[in-house]
Length: 136
Image (cartoon, rainbow, N blue to C red):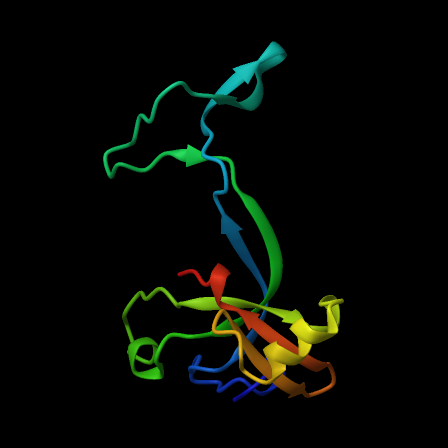
């Protein structure tokens, strides 16, 4: 497993940790469209129904966090030159953010399937990857 300061100069590999990845989740669907309000100021306004573009895509309001991300994609999927790829990643969180000692212990002992423990991250300590937020 490599950390951000040790990344392979040829590209990412499974298990790499990358800084400042935005992880978003749509908890309550609110479709919006771009509009303008007074004095031509841009705004995002609620939209009654889903009106997708040519690819069926629509803008929505999402809850997001910026965190380090653990690369989950297989190295063989992301090491192809001259290909645009999407990388599957999970946010990484400090184990110290868990106040419940029994939960913290169960995560670090690999007893919780949704949380992948990362013990001894160089210069940082113990972390876990939250697989519930894993995204491309």
